[in-house]
Length: 430
Ligand SMILES: *Cc1c(COP(=O)(O)O)cnc(C)c1O
Image 1 (tube, rainbow, N blue to C red):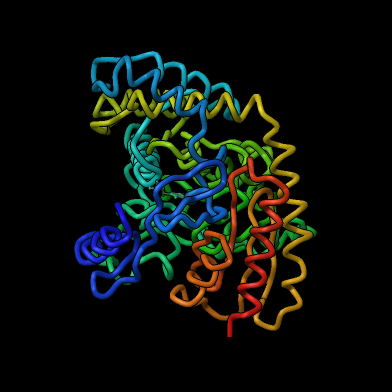
Image 2: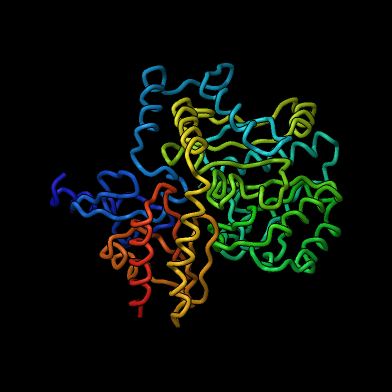
């Protein structure tokens, strides 16, 4: 398309095409991207932006990666898709085998689905069917953390932060879950044993009606980009065991190295009864998620009244998505992901630190390949987005948070460019 055609296309799509969380009345125009390579997005007008978002945690190896392309092309020549009911294929088997091997010990049963939100729905249904099968019908609620985010479908929404998580809009139909205060003790601080008290009290009071606890391990993502103390997670695990409540760990954002560990739950050396994976699973190429559970949970569900687990997406275990996920795992594990993420962490700490002196900045936080600048006031996307683009970078702030989680392959020079551009822009915000 030439630039006139692009102008027309953008005008048309503003009238007809929804974007995430967007209005259909005079929405901000979206930027047309015509290609992406490594850590660079190429816009229709020829400008290039350094990508600080990895397309929302996903594109850990960067864009247009030859190995990932090759995996997809190879699978495309065999079959793009085949139903998973009654049929199976090598990419699904191999990927499940890899996930079982990579994830903490007792997780060994794998359910593939299409997106993170669905993986969370699946996890919740597993927990509910588990207690039904055990004849404990009263155990049907979930306990989640304030500040959490688990997706946009109904079950997932019900366990998102009740204030930022759309409960005011859909409260009438959402299942009523329980919420514990966000952990107060941060990652890297000295552990304060009183921090777990509010959670422990809720568990003590409500365990008879609780099917599961669900949380994001160590890093709360879209609910506030907040890093909490691993001891909190360890205590949650212990309380779940003590009171007979399943633990669902949502590693959809944190999985595959982002936090500095392959899975963030490794910081606390705990494991889940049910684990959700997504986002970076395919290296940012296709939508795919997985919910893993233990033999004990899976077999209990299977012995229940239904005689099976009641879920089955049309595009379950899509072969293209599984193939590219396998190639992405190969790249991750044979590469120096841990050294790269550590290097990004150290560099972000150094390069974002000067922003702490700004009057407009409340706090800087860095963990793994995640850098967060929390402002004192909400940022205006209409103002900051063009400024960031003019400075040559792509970020998508929300609320008071200007944050980055670049592809792991970003070079030191590109990361410096990204940090410097971001600091320059926030300095000029009024
Ligand atoms: C993004 C996200 C989800 C939802 O995943 P989708 O693929 O957007 O449905 C769930 N949990 C966490 C922690 C996430 O970051």
